[in-house]
Image (cartoon, one colour):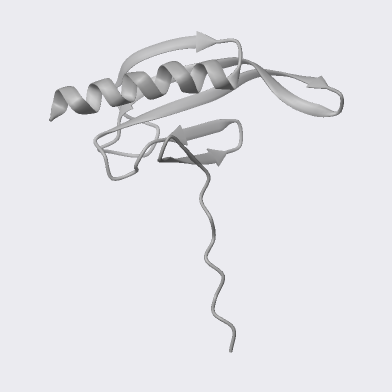
Length: 98
């Protein structure tokens, strides 16, 4: 019997990315802090939908997913820029905690 296929998880700089609709969660779900990225606007370029405005929130992850206290927030004009600054915020906050 063939072994069950293990589902691969998309990661960025070693941390998982989880997409639910227009919202992306970044970070380990067991950590106290998580990064939430909301795609506010997107444009079609050559039949590919790309984000043109992304809201970033560094928030508490001890309660309901995506409903915690917001510690930092900003907006960027594409997903790469949003992940770049958000990943730095998350790393810095986790190091300060502990």
